[in-house]
Image (cartoon, rainbow, N blue to C red; front, side, top):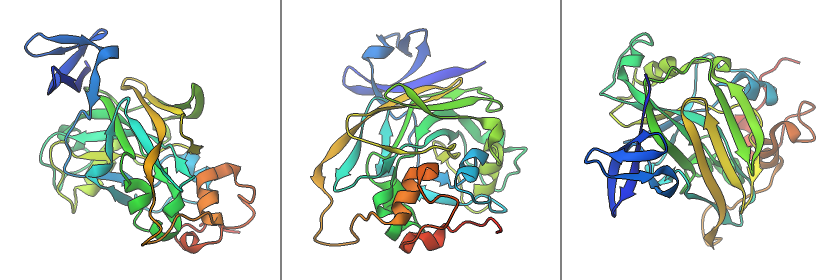
Length: 294
């Protein structure tokens, strides 16, 4: 049996509530209609870790091969966002891509476990959108720091669902009501338990920590004014609006947003005009050359 818990602002205070029908109910009996609630992130992680490639559709789209084992990157906590909040595309940037995902939430201190034991350490699951600001891919392709870690680029929610079975579940992303990503969790190379056990070999996972489990094919740019939603069977729907940032990315220091073939080819995925005929050029391309034999 599944249960869903959402953290909201209630009378000005952050309160944990349980979803009961179309209302959110606090332990003291106070309740609010879901549509009227101001949502907060449902968990408080000490770290957010994301896997690079996992869905076979995404691998096929990029005409590459999966590595022998998962590879990961880290998103700072300042990137965390929530259901119905705005996602910022900074001025001077053009290539902000959605990536609908499922987030694994750790429930207790986790280190040196097997995949068979991992379920005991998972508190539940929620929906995530692992946005990527590909304008910085040439300089941050290895670390993904600004690409995936810029402010607001990790909305999760609306709630934490316990007792959910991740097998054979549909995940869909919508932009302005149109389905743009669609896949099934059975098409992941590494399941949720494997990912948790893999990370916990060398990194201690603590209650509330979040692992993002990968996105299907067809990640594409979104634009200010777009409404982006990620829906996972049994976990609900995460909704965000894309807005323009209040200040442009400064040109007084640091690497600047670029629009190289590497940036465009990654942002446009299978829609890139040269996809399959040659590798993209640019500083970031050396990190992502195709591994498919001629």
